[in-house]
Length: 294
Ligand code: GRG
Image (cartoon, rainbow, N blue to C red; front, side):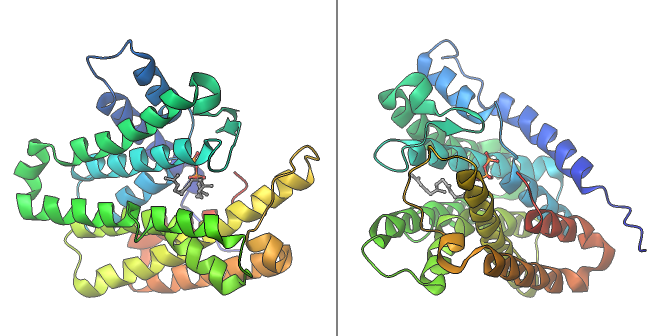
C-alpha cells in the first residue's frame, strides 16, 4: 500500500481558517451595526468551504507566489461566490430556504436586504481588488489584468451567462453536452478563474497557465457533477422537496455521473504530472472533489 503523507483535510482546514480571518478583516466597516452589514456577515462568515480561494492559494504557491499577495484576490473571488449564492437562493431564481445549513439570506433578513447584500458583496470584491497597496506590490497593469480576468468569469460570458442559460433550459431537450456547457460557465468559470489568478500572480508561463486552466476546467466540472450527485442523494432522502431537477444525475443517471467524475479526475491528475511533488496539494484537492461528501 502506498502511504500518502499529504493530509488534505488538514490542508483544507488550515487554509480555510487563513481565508476566514482575512474575510473578517475585509468585511470590517464603519457601518457595522446596519442590517445590511449583518446580512453580509451572516452570508459570508458563517459557513462555506472556501474551495475557490483555497484553489487560488494552492496554485499561486505552486508558482512561488506569497500567500499574502494572493489573499486579497482569493477573498474577492469568495465574495463574488457568496453574492451568487445569496441571489441564486432568492424566490425569483432557485427559491431555496436553506443555505450552508441555515436559513438562506432572504429567509433570515427579507428579500430586499438579501438583494442588497448580494450587490454589496459583488461591489466589495472590486473594492478589495483595486486596493492601491496591492497595486504597489503587483503593479497596476497586473492588477488590471486580474480584475479583467475575474470580472469576465463572473460576467454574461461566464457565471451569470451560465445561470441565465439554465433558466431557459426547461424549454429545450437537455443532453449531457448541453449540461456540461452550462456547468462550465455557471460553476466552472469562477473555479477556473480562481486557479488562473493564482498562476498569473505567481508569474506562470503561458504553457503553465494553459495547463492550470485545463486542470481547473476539469475540476470545476467535477465539482458541479459531484454537487449534483450529493443533491440527488439529498432529494431522494427528502420527500418534501418537489423542485424540478435537471442536472447531470437526472440526465445520465448516478453511475454515468460517477464515471464522468472519474474521467475528469484523471484529466486533472494528468495536467499536474509535470510538477511532481510540488503539485501534491492540487492533486489531493482534485481527489477530494471527486470523492467529496459535503
Ligand atoms: C449570480 C444568481 C447568480 C447565479 C450565478 C454560481 C451560481 C450562478 C449560483 C449559485 C448556486 C449554485 C448551486 C451554484 C452551483 C455551484 C455550486 C456547487 C455552489 C456551491 O458551492 P460550494 O459547495 O458552497 O463551494 P460553499 O457553501 O462551500 O461556499
